[in-house]
Image 1 (cartoon, one colour):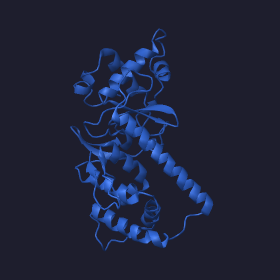
Image 2 (cartoon, helix red, strand yellow; image 1 turned 90 degrees about the vertical axis):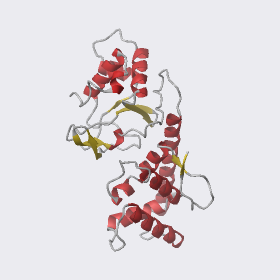
Image 3 (cartoon, one colour; image 1 turned 30 degrees about the vertical axis):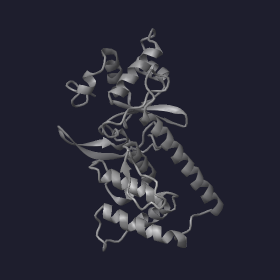
Image 4 (cartoon, helix red, strand yellow; image 1 turned 135 degrees about the horizontal axis):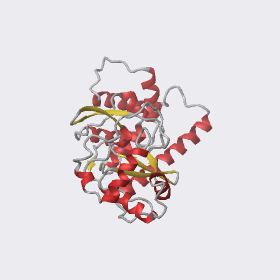
Amino acid sequence: MVRDGFLDSEAINSLTPHSEVLYHRLLLAGDDAGRFDGRPTIVASRLFPLKNSLRVSDVEKWLSECLQARLILSYERNGKPYLQITKWQRCGSSKFSKYPDINGKFDIEYVVMETRDGPKEIVTSSIPPAEGVPRGSLPGAEGVDTPFSRARSETETETETETETETETETETNKPPINPPKGEVCLFEWLKISISKLYKRKDSTQWSEKEVKKLKEVSRRPDSRKEFYVIEALYESGYQYFRRDIITLLNNWPGEVDRARLNGFGRKEDGDGSQKPVQD
């Protein structure tokens, strides 16, 4: 499959001939989500099976060039590196990827983006951060340790810590309570009103059972108020790839918080969470 715009792409034109060949072969080898194993030795053996004299160090260099051109993303899950081809269009019927995304999920989600050939379905995890956010360097490759790679590592650690805390709490209580504790009611209602406003939902529109259940889970997160402010700042900045509806946002809350932070949105500590975030 040759992707639209391949021949006259400025990003691809910036590659050296060898890194362009690697990128082209990666397009052929990526799964239905545009993901692939990120270990340079595996990339070398799978993408160049007949090139026995190929050096892994050369593959690392070419991958770094693709990273710098913003044609791929690199990330780690559980200590293992993966690659994600950016702006990957729907090309198959699979609902699940062979590899996890940056948040550890295997399911494939899409958003509709305008392209020069009209609206196209793009894999959500393949949408790169806003322009100006530096790319990370591939593990073992020559490159610079950028703020993007450090931020991604920090946010993954935070997400894993939150998941462990939630798992421990659920184990101790067996099941989460049907209704939030009294101390959480105000926060639950505040989030409900704030999210409704963000999505321009009418006050008369009732929340579904699934939405209420997921919102209760979100409201129990230690920093859910701050997290909402971060997401709100991202959406109000003109960012066009926001979640299509409230239930999708709630189901992907941790990942959306990470996406907002990776796009440069954070907030100055004020002690009560009442101020909106500022972009660093």
